[in-house]
Length: 461
Image 1 (cartoon, rainbow, N blue to C red):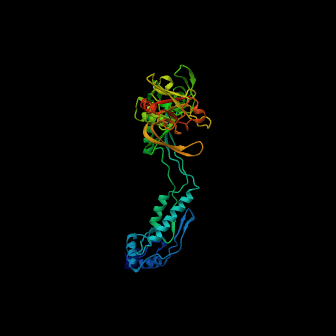
Image 2: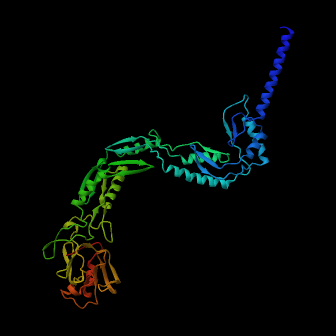
């Protein structure tokens, strides 16, 4: 190699060293080409230059989502001070690469003076606006396990186009100090069929399948399977949801053949005469679809094999639990009851089929329409030494002290002594009867009171 060639190579090497040195110096003192700080382009600028540019840039306080301005506020200062220059210098050091990089990158630098009140107000308004946008968008539908027709299947998820509010707010929080805020659209994601949650739902529902139990309703037993109880079921958020239309057939059967509430029946009076009782009273029970469904589905969940319907009935009046459930003799009223004959103006009290007391009475005034209501009722409660208050048929208020009180209708009719009454004739009730109660002689009321028990049937005819 001759001396001239050596000189040329030396020059090239020197120039190369100089170029590399200049490049290295530039890389260490200038931001990469496509770098932004808080959304402001600072590519090719020094830390000082970048600070000057970002500090002078006003915050638009505008938020865009999917190309649309979703929030518009008033422009404000970025909030940087001279003390923040060191943050830009630190950011410059962290972004240094050996070779120049054209990769887009935004660096977040938090100013010393952050207007937290402004950001909080923006965030609240932004949340409201996102939710308003979502009102007209389709919500995603989670995949879920469903029990129907005796088997468990998985319904696949359905995508929607509703924005993920929490994800967008998180995006806002990370860019709240940017000069311009552009949120990346993010949608709500439905629960996938392959998720652990949906698989667990399927396990819970499959545990209900192929079960059999006996349902005791008074003296009758019904054998039921899962399919007889559940039409459809899901298990969502750790809770079962049941469609129990399958039970309707059983409930209707029980209420037709066994229930006693508001049903007329043939009653044998004290004289042996058979009459048809009036409907509309409060004594009796009926099987509740809602209660039966709750009891039987709970039994399936707990794998019970025997269930009693005692807690699944309902009634009307003072006690809505279904008075008389469990009594099957004498059309469901049993052999202990009170009998009131309006035409005879007489009462008979029976205990275990035997008449233990009877007395003449005066019932509600017929001419004013205040007749003692016919039907099958029950003694709601018993009370000593009280005052009965109400309004007479002429509109005047009354307050009548009584020693014995045993009401049997919701309208306030019951058995009580009537010390003020002077007309005890068998026809007094026609024009001079009570306001609806069964008036008793003071000499009879105490014995009658002691003979009655709470929830005892009262047949008025």
